[in-house]
Length: 139
Image (cartoon, rainbow, N blue to C red; front, side, top):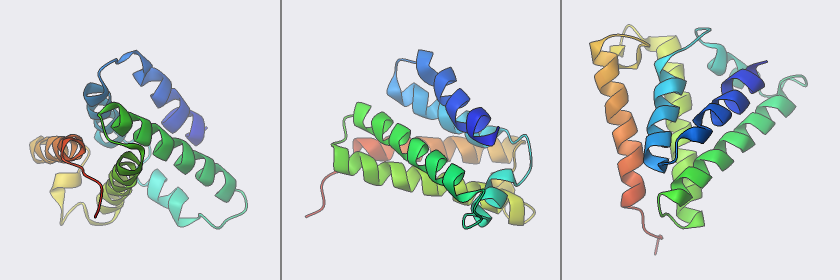
């Protein structure tokens, strides 16, 4: 259910958005702007070594990183840079949710609602999209 609702269905829902920057914005707005079950994602990740969780989490992580890599490739990054950016974006997503779960009172910017949270989420999304335009291969 989690895999279907929070990965497969979301990717399908974004399929009609043709502009990759708009798709990236919509992806993070949806993924971070709402949370059906507070702390679900961090709880699943915390049990990554559980035999029932591990294969599903691996599939979801692989699918999400691949999807983000494709998005960043569409934003004109080469494959290696797109992969690095995808990993950074996914890490930001997981960290954002963990902060929301564990320290929302200290870091209100990561709340699911409110003006402060909306501004912070827009800042994150802008940074993740803009960084794709400034990537170069490491020397």
